[in-house]
Image (cartoon, rainbow, N blue to C red; front, side, top):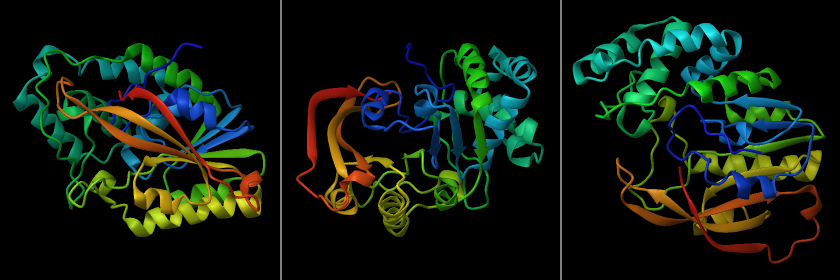
Length: 291
């Protein structure tokens, strides 16, 4: 199966880790993603059905629009990817138009434009809800036509929701699998990033997620997989899970020339684990590139 790229640029996207995640994900009839992000796991797995959720209404609005009107959306989006719009003044004018718009279709088109023309593909909002990522200064932003078409085709198997992550857990039933890619635990006290969709994701949220994962696996027979940074805090939060540890090569500059290695983990909360705890760290020696 050819590896499929997401049509959005996304900080912390899981394209490079898809193989490792798939090796951990159990079989099931439906995959639920409470933090779908750019949807690399959705695009590279083969469940019968999907429930894809995110707290960001612009992201979910874009996905729903693409599912419902794929041809029209792709044709309209392409008109924004022209040389005259790859300009600082044009970018800020379109960003202002996005922030002023209440129309889901218009916001979806502009969200894709901003994602591909903004700095590092970041998604960030100010305290008033305004998208505030600066111009990216790329030579020629890529229009992801083939990736959009593939997503739209596969989206026929998906339902999209925009709600807090714990609501997605409530929708799960036996026979379903949950995969979570939450905002990551900070590697340092100054590294936390909380401006995504105007909602911070603090330690209380991380603890609640781990608690929900234990409850789903232990009480409802629903396996849960979570990705996160491999930190002492993460190991403590996921102490009831089977942990796969790996080293990821992550880009740390706009041009991707500089990379550093970051420890990540994939935690599997399996119904079979409870009542039979054992040493559960499975280190992976190979390095993984983050794209």
